[in-house]
Image 1 (cartoon, helix red, strand yellow):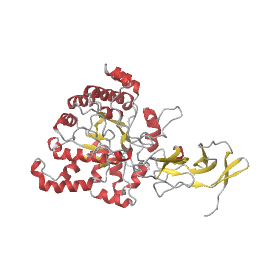
Image 2 (cartoon, helix red, strand yellow):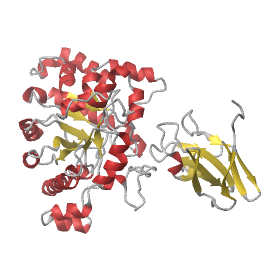
Image 3 (spheres, chains in turn brown, cyan):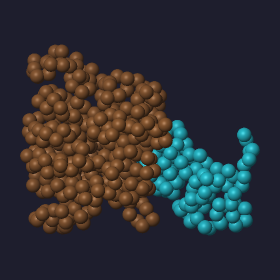
Image 4 (tube, one colour):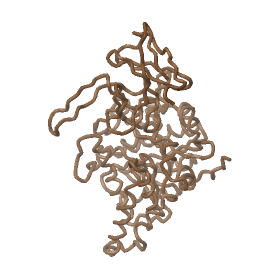
Length: 359
Length: 121
């Protein structure tokens, strides 16, 4: 692997230096951060394996994901990635804080640390501008502030939320994103955290296992909202990335969506095409955690049921516990999709150079 | 293929690996973990059958037994279950079998002669 197949990893989680974060925060948030009251935290669902992989510790006691040079050496070099999209996950949870000013300040500090500690360190890195959606106007300001740095190639928000992302409340974020031609992405992990709604429509699950399995529901709700509310009619150039939300659920939902449209389209008359057409054009999904049916031909069949060649992008989710390695994913998908999934679709979305043939 | 080319290699001294502990050895380029499970030595290829993670870097602990919903969880088998550091798949160190998958660990026969622990590779 890597000798002939160029690869872009669309979901890497670097860990920001806490002291640098603190130094980038204005008061009173610097004092708040220093006191240890950093955000809404998490629900406390227990993963016996930990959420961060346990085998990334280096000889000096630090972890691979904590410094740009170590991530470059022990991850980017090891797998021979051409580019990696950095999605700092810490500030995502803070985005569900009830205090929109604090949340925006932490996101802003995090983006500054990414720019200074990570984007400058390695030309293979690109990053997401993390924003707190609780105040979409502050989020838009943050997008405008960061967008001049060409290392930022995406806007990132938590998929845990108090209302679906198609609602007009969030339009300032999408307006700012399209001004700079940046895709908007959501990432899971904060379902049920802070001011988010319950992690599932049925309420609070009991275990991490149950919560994690049900994350698909959050993605489904945001997808239906984005399409029905006409976000892609209002913002025809907007691309929306469903990071780590699963893949195989998509085709049956597209069928259900199109069937319903035929009967109910008068309630959303701005939709002049079947919902699946908007999805194919505007939605991108990432591979990890790739579904693993006993018969992998079943996964291949699912990948034939939607335009996976245009929508699906490879991701590792490094260093989270449920990550995928590039060789595993490349082997899991049909050969005909490999170059699209492992590189081309992401290169088009994030405006990265075309793949250089490895031959 | 049976025993062709198999060699017996000393990998540790008796007492070197404490109960519950492990030692990684390199045998002809293969990384192999030697575990001391309640006094018995177990040798395992350092590759998880799922996504090829370094399984021998995972935690060794116990696990829950099957139980009835709503009743207290039952814990046991301390020191016998190896969990992968990537995806948490659990393996029985005594048999090499996974607790929730058909794929198992690659194990090597272990013998103790005198003061030395040998594996057959």
